[in-house]
Length: 291
Image 1 (cartoon, rainbow, N blue to C red):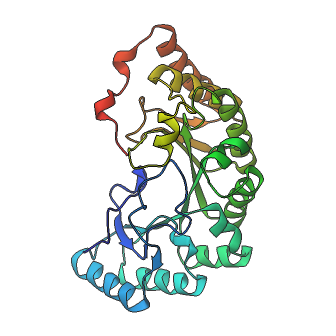
Image 2: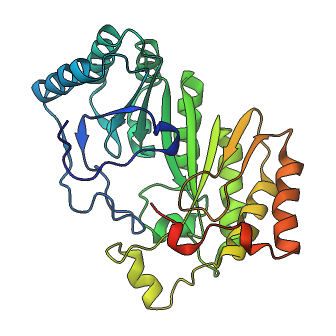
């Protein structure tokens, strides 16, 4: 299959068949992201999507998981998305899950009935980049929404019955706003109560606009142990029910997994033990981190 540009997907979609129904990201203004900067956003035509599904059926007829790319594919018109979902479930008899990236604005643009329809037609999981709950940080990185809007978007997905996975970015506020970042992000995540919570750790690509902020000294990057301190502060403030916490993204210094709330204290203890004994040998080396 020919993709337009590089393709990115969540770690949990590692074994999924990826179908690119949109190109790029409609918002494409976040300063920490360089992933879609060389792509002009567009929704692929119905004929292109039909050709993609036909190709996938021929070469991957036993696919059990499918992920719809690119960056915010939920922005696609609901009627077209329903048509895509129907064709996927008709052509892939073993299909068990369909996932999709979405931005908060795209979720808020859908009605509750539209989200419920998408679930009824076989959409399974939505991935939402919360990134931070701090209004100052969200503004500084040009996320395009305020914390209240982010919380409302997440709650809307949850109310629809769709599974929701949220990501946050450790270190996005630098040393300057680390405490605020952890505290305010926990508030937004608590308000959403997602099914999955996945921290990533900030990596500054040279072509990302945030690189200039770092170079000018307005944002001081966290070192590995400071990143763990921030994760600890975040987890300590979480009050979630039935949420899987996973930091298995390649950007993270330490892979962690726990089910909250019952394994919260164990998770905190693991982090505390590494910090107390300065066990840096357990952390991913800088040259092994990746986006």
